Image (cartoon, rainbow, N blue to C red; front, top):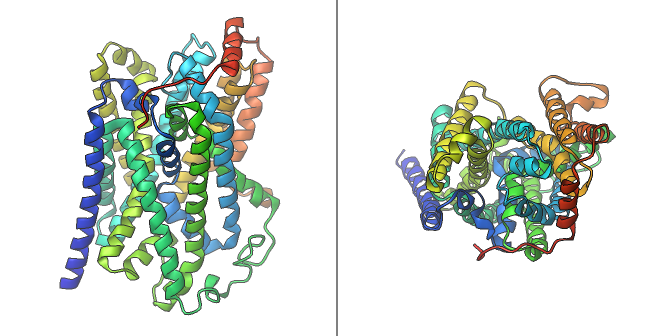
Length: 508
């Protein structure tokens, strides 16, 4: 018993040291924050290195540490398609969205959020698009934050035996603390630290399970036929086109992932974007590949150690607990916290900024406040939205996979088509944007909650793909069936396309 107490005491010490570092970064960054633009985008002065790793790590979440190894652990090498489409989606998003979105948001009176940008880009005097976009964004973000809280709760339950509700509350407190203090710059800089921690954790874990197993290759998949073939399922049947196409949905999520789009908007200069893209894509490729390989090679080591897996989403946690002493295991478990926090903090910050600046019922009130008071309003909303996510997680528990699939895919389906068309189609108008956003949201939600089965399992695919296609078609049809935008709107589009890269302040 004494040994277990000492083990847990060391884990707590490692966690406390980790949080102390995050809080320290937040305190340093809060000194340079006096306005909402500082709190939301850090005055658009992120360096290429910070932008790259912050954009990368903010997409990982507990999904990368818990769910993806579980998918590879149970389904085998056919999950390699997921790595391929995620990396491709990230690279294309950086390539076609980042530069023009940064330039266009600056041109649109320094828009700080996507709903604000869409309103100004499309001359929405009715404010309908901004209100709908804000409401849908916060809706999806609550699901996303919920997934992070569930992942953190699983970690605390596995390591300390804590009740799931207490684990959720402690995870929320940890995430909210430094985000509340330091805003966007604190979140971005802690993302860099957490990105490096995640990568190192996966390298150590994968090397350990391969070395620990007597026959690391022979025991993979437990002898299941087709387990190591990316073209077959665990029954040895060739994967269907619906399966492969469905995997594409994970890549499409990037185009509507507003926490990633924020990093594009915040980079210091346009000429840094290519460098940021290459580094961020490399980081994502390494992390997703290592997560995939850990899921494949964990089984032989765990089987030989006599460890039974009842919940595949705990593979990473169990490997860290059983194969490492407390001093190393604690550090590896902080990688899970890092993945959870690097996404949840971004989502909390984004949701509070959108609630304060884009929701009609709060926008007028926020506009009457001084700059410093608007920052405090954003902080208060951050706590409120985080609490809502925790209540949802307690009342309606679900797997991390289902929560992330809907939040990530839903945002991609709802906003992806509107983002791309707003940046690249001169004739794109308000009616098309509203149609695309609403249809994308409805179709993605139907695919997630209502439809099931279907020919070749087509209703089981990730909701981003059907939602993105339906939303894109609705946006195009809505635009072509209505009057073109005003001439000054089209002229602004031409100026942005031709414009020189906008500059900003000193890199963070």
